[in-house]
Amino acid sequence: MKIHEYQARSLFTEYGIPTATGDVAATSQEAVAIARKTGFPVVVKAQVLVGGRGKAGGVKVVADEASLILEFNRIKNLTIKGYSVDRLLVAKAIDIKKEYYVAVTIDNVRGDAVIIASADGGVDIEETARTSPEKILKFYTQGQKTLDESRWALVAAQLFSDVRLQQSATVIIARLLKLFFEKDCSLAEINPFVINREGNWMAADAKIIIDDNALFRQEKIRGLRDLQYDDADEMEAKEKGLSFVKLEGNVGCIVNGAGLAMGTMDAIKLLGGQPANFLDVGGSSNPEKVLSAFKIILRNKDVKVVLMNIFGGITRCDDIANGILAARKQIKIPVPLVVRLTGTNEREAREILSKSGLNPFTSMRQAVMEAVKLAK
Image 1 (cartoon, one colour):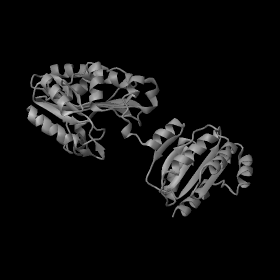
Image 2 (cartoon, rainbow, N blue to C red; image 1 turned 90 degrees about the vertical axis):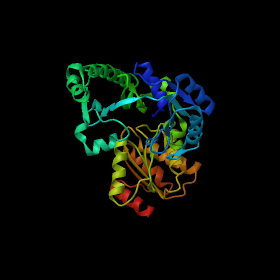
Image 3 (cartoon, rainbow, N blue to C red; image 1 turned 135 degrees about the horizontal axis):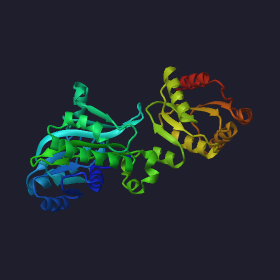
């Protein structure tokens, strides 16, 4: 789950990571009141959960009240990557001496948390990573949740120009790492991480992404969710106990198990089709889940066929079959339905479906080939 910059700044403050004074404003009057407290110049920043705000005109430094009102209203009327601007962050502009980059994230390949840092921070950090990857340094925590400064010192010496900067930056990066673990983040990023003219470190921007799977234990952060950025179907699927991601294709997929779902999508692509979604009904035997899955998938008008690929283990094939019949009674299924069932209670499932005129495949390849053919 992404949170806005002003919300991430609040977390930074909670963990002792310095940011410029400021607050979020919904009106120009509120913006002026904030600026009068912080003093000019201030930076106004659109609060939208997409990248490239600056390049889209959503970030501006202003020196006086008249300019603040003008720029606030201009940015408020912007649509950035499809999203309107409801609120702006108004913060004291930092007199920047040098920009750096630092972030904590997870390296899924290594299965370890990694601190990524560069002496070349700023909006072009992706370009730096592409053209000068040697400037991007990585420090793996090796399973530890605190900074091992004896190992980190070698990295810090490459990043920061003098010992004082190395020591002061290390304190802040250790706090960022603490925040990362305690708030169950998948990303905690400061870009740019700056030295101001007085020689002090500040987070000039704040980006936090929380691991959705850990939100159950982050009640306070759960309340920060901005619902306009959530897909309504994906949210409904989550409430129904389904894992659902909408895609661009026309073969609707209902599968049990994430691995089988991924394999099914690969098979569809391999055989010339395009999956319309990832949908995993999980390992339970609840016919209601099947009904909910049909309702969600069939809202997508691009779906030309629904493919059910069920490998019955914990999931009982007869429950899936009953779910199919329940769905057909309660909703109109306006597209062909291709079913592959194998595993637990397969025989019972076939008997249930055959009475309704459905003859499921036992071969996944045959079922996928049929679905791809019908979708064309």
